Amino acid sequence: MPPHSLRSRLALAAIKRALPSLVSADPVARLAEGLHVAVVGSGSPLPDRKRGNPCVAVIAGGRVFVVDAGERSAETMSRMQLAPSRIAAVLLTHFHSDHIGGLPTVNLQRWVADAAQTPLRVLGPTGVERVVAGFNEAYELDRGYRTAHHGPEVAPPSGAGMVAEPFSIPAGEDAKVVLDEDGLKVTAFTVEHPPIEPALGYRFDYRGRSAVISGDTIYAPSLIRVARGADLLLHDALSPELLKLVEDAAGRAGLDMRRRILADVPDYHATAPQAADAAREAGVGALAITHVIPPLPLKGLEAIFLGDAREHFAGELWLARDGDLYSLHSGQTGVVRSSMMGRWPGR
Ligand SMILES: [Zn+2]
Ligand SMILES: [Zn+2]
Image (cartoon, rainbow, N blue to C red; front, side, top):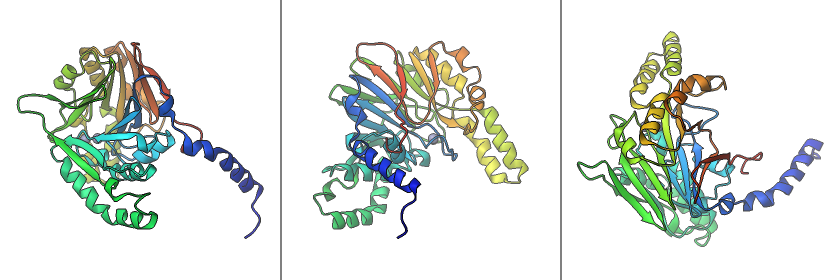
């Protein structure tokens, strides 16, 4: 083997120095008491270099509840140093591919991170049992290989798969408490994302603080009712103006099927001003807009994406980025935004 170049020797020295803190990092352990909402993926199914598919990690009392697990969720969680062994459960809003595509990788990371003895809980509306059964089946051979290779102590078969916990919102109602443990209450509520039925959002209440995740929806009165008085609302949004540019470009390029798909998208997501209307009417403290459609490769497009949303809502309004951490400290009222993204991948 030829001698390493100076560049390679420096890289090797740097990684040796960084690895001990990288592998043991656990920023969740240092979070102040309260509710913390970490945006793992703030994008949509449209490939986006800046934003992963939808995924939010809600942190309460050191436990991580993952809402949706789109592609790249596990990779971005690693960059944010969110330890997979802290994942208590996954909650799915609906079964569009961009919300479930990263589920098996999140599950694998959790399983092998700390020899999980019990399967990953995946809560969701009826249908979640099919999604979980499908992924379990697709990954069954892989699980067998890993247990055979590392041994059952390191890769215990009992913790390998996922277990579905389906629930349904009773007829005539639009919300239901689906989890109530260790001071954390999670309420699922219906939103409007036709033709997807049901499509849900989730409200988290913990130690006097509250955060609401809209899931995918247009402006929805049920969300406004359930989100009433919450400290933070994460709402999806789409810019019809910017999406039309992509649609027209597809049309001019003769990509008619792609143009038709893009033309169908606006009627199942809110615009940023509509999300701001929902935030104002619900009386929430702060709004972070996520599930950004279309991608915004240039910083200058962000203002166009938001439109006049700030005129619709007087509270703090952010355009969410992957790695954002919104902290709702116990005994306080505001929302503090920071980033969990470090200089090093995995840090
Ligand atoms: Zn979506
Ligand atoms: Zn969707």
